[in-house]
Amino acid sequence: MSVIVIEFVTLDGIVSDPDGSGGTPSGGWAFRHGPEAVAGDKFRLGSTLDAGVMLLGRTTWQLFSRIWPGRDDPFAARMNAATKLVVSRSLTDVSAWANSRVIDGDLVDVVKREEREVIVTGSLSVVRTLMAEELIDEYRLLTFPTVLGSGRRLFPDDGPQTDLECLSAERAGAAVLVRYRRAAAPAAGTAPVRSRS
Image: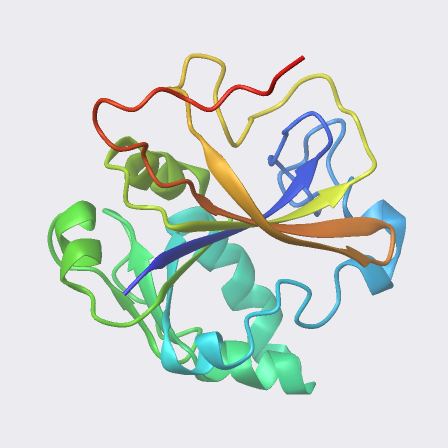
């Protein structure tokens, strides 16, 4: 099992309101770059989405449950067929989007027990909880050539240092999909390698 976080993100690390549904003044920044940057399987989930489980916070689930069931393209079919776990204390009825259920119990415990790949979409509060427990194995960030200056950042200013390893980078319309995984910690007693000048 691994935990994969997928996010639309600006060059300055903002992840809030990429589609404008939040009604913020700068909202909709990802969608201003045209449909080729956001449509289809831009995060290269493929069979991971088929065999894994999506983990969504309440706000993201509510937004997606209004959008995805009405779509009929191949990627939408995969999204609609995927198992969805919803993190919410207030939702009780999640029948609006097939294969959804509200998690029972503590989020961290549920993720630790899950045997399938876990794909966290948006859902910044869920991501931050998993970050704090060092449970995120991979970040797939669709980075847009936009600088907002303010908004909610994926990696908060007061967060811990996080070392990542770049797995790949590829252009996706106006954006760039970059895949990072958590870097292996250096062995105890070893010094970091420094280049010679």
